[in-house]
Length: 172
Image (cartoon, rainbow, N blue to C red):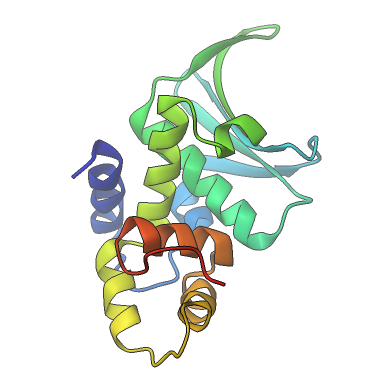
C-alpha cells in the first residue's frame, strides 16, 4: 500500500471516521489548520501555507463544493506527506499550490497529494461496501450514486473506482 493511502487511513482512524462523507474541513479544523476561502485565479484550486508550526489552507471560493472538498483533502495530503517548498514573501514560509499542473499530476508530490485526497475522501473499504449495496444498470449510475454519497465530483469518483479496479474505464 502506498504511503499516501497509509497516511489517509491513519488520519481517518485517528478521528474514528468510518462512514461517508468524510469532512475535510472538519479534519483540518481538528488538526489546527485554518481553511480560508479566497478569490484565486481559476487555474489555482488552493494552497497550503506553513509558517512556524501554523498552517493555513487557501481554497478557491469560486470552485464547486466537491472541488473545494478535494482541494482541502489534497492540501492535508501535502501537510501529512511533504515538507513543502520555500516561498519568499516578506517572511520565510513554505507553500504548496494546487493548480492546473498539479491536477494533471505529473509531479511526484502532486500525485501523492491527489492519492491521499482520494483515499481520504473515498476510502477503499467504504467505497467497496457502498458499491456492494447499490443496484445499478450502468457504470454511470454507480458513479452518480457513489459521487453523491461521498460528495465527490463524478469525475473524481470515476477515477477512484478505476484505481480500485471496481470499474474498468470512464463512464459513458
